[in-house]
Amino acid sequence: MADKRVTIYDVAKSAGVAPSTVSRAFSRPGRVSAATHAKVMAAAKELDYRTTAPPAQERAERHHRLGIEVPDLTNPYFAEIVSGMQEAAHELGYLLILLDTVEDEDRERSSLESAISVVDGIVLSGTRLSDAALTHLTKRIPVVVLNRRVAGLDSVTPDFEHGMEQAMSHLAENGTRTVTYLSGPVNSWSDGERWRAARAAARVHDLQVQRHGPFPPTTAGGEQAFEELQDALPHAVVCYNDLIAFGFLVSALRAGVRVPGELSVMGHDDILLARHIGGGLTTVVSPKRAQGRAAVERLVRRIENPSSLRAPVEGSLPVRLVPRGSTGPRDQD
Image (cartoon, rainbow, N blue to C red):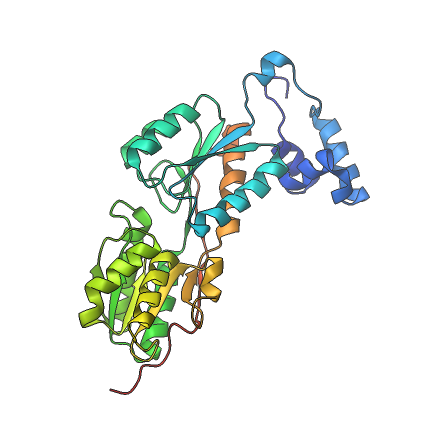
């Protein structure tokens, strides 16, 4: 091991525990059992893992900071993802630097360029950059991408296909025949995947589906969508995210539309407010905190032990539909 610095991942493998357990054993020993603590300490000693601070010249090689790009921090969806990242980063001894790009591609480019010199790696949770730009970025610094797959890059995505299959099955069972998908940002990879999955699932369940948009991924975007569709409403709308769904649902209720008798409304993400709007918003739940944790853990492993991950790692996390009051049986025509 003389030519290669031992990391907590090496200690974890030797001790047969998770990397986060190793981190707690060193920083907060009271959070692990005496037996686990002894096992971790023995593995660390055997591997000559250094728990004291490295010399100044070696510290300069690492910042122990991670850059976290989000397109809109005011969206509760990203706040939950960042919360999961924060938990994992704290356990692994890293500090997060937040880069809120406000859905602006130029701002995203400049923020990432500024961050490269002060962080050890970057998580992109909603990047709008091209595949070529991301490939160039990962040649300069370790990168993990959320909600998108890019050839050659580590990624963590929800299972869009399974989520949309559950959504269309639920609508069909409740008498829906026409569905409009309200799309989000035009350059969003996840929006394109959701639309592709919606079309495939609609064919299976004999539903007529069309796309309308794009709309800003906000409640104002949902209000705009209702204004454009209110004179010819479909049986149901499936929205890019919960915020668009909120705007559409509240606008429909204010206009006297019976929900779900005349119109079913469905979102994506299951942010906290989804349980409290009207009779509750039916939505496709994504594992936000788990996704954030997975991204940070994978990025830190890429930083500290790159030889263990020679090929890019793509992961897909399970999603599920949560039916609430905004969808249900249609009134008899």
